Length: 322
Image (cartoon, rainbow, N blue to C red; front, side, top):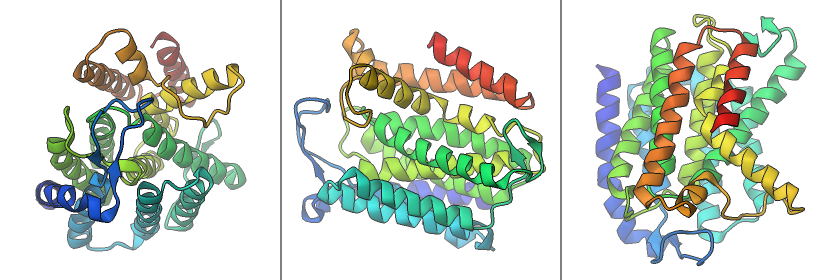
């Protein structure tokens, strides 16, 4: 009951907040002006939806979660992401400042009540903490930036994250982790409320605040649920849950390095750009990426109890054939 109410409350809060934020976006300095290159929209659009998503997620969880101590590091890290994201949306921060905020958020999360019970390819038990924590940190940083970089079409990041969070919520339910299910349910409700205004043609964008928040939340929840001792799944499964944004980002970075450019230099080589280039309409490109996410999550379900090596091989095969 609490999970359903949290979902509904987050949906309601996001639906109410988004129109308000659309009106006050110019005063907040949160308007996305098209640059005529990578961006596909033509008119200035508010980019304050991330604030609505974050608030609509946190409020129901804070109200219903009886003991926030186990997730205190996660909540504090998410708040840091939102603060840095807001200043990035308003002032176009240098990537070094953005990365600093992400590092602080991940560090805070890892200092929280995180118990490592599985390390990829090293079996059960916290046998190699010097390796486990850097791997988890790199994963969260990678996913946070991957979701941020892949947010290029109306409804894309929100809808793709919604699919991943729904699967994580299912795993959390099976593992008997109500706190994780509560967070994923609230975030899903917030995303649905936001998507009402973000589907093509979008009236609002989530901005870096929203995309980084979603990447951070999804990555942390994927880590927590796959580390659960009550769930006999491979820790590599966390990669597949967010595998499409990761694949998109790695592919683009490799193409940039091949051309002798910085892997962090923005361009129009992301999967959604390529779908548009071959003639797909905006909504068709988004739908195609939704299907890719759904297909990968279907594979996650089928191989959820398999070995680390098999999970990795399946992801590599998926990546090569995509």
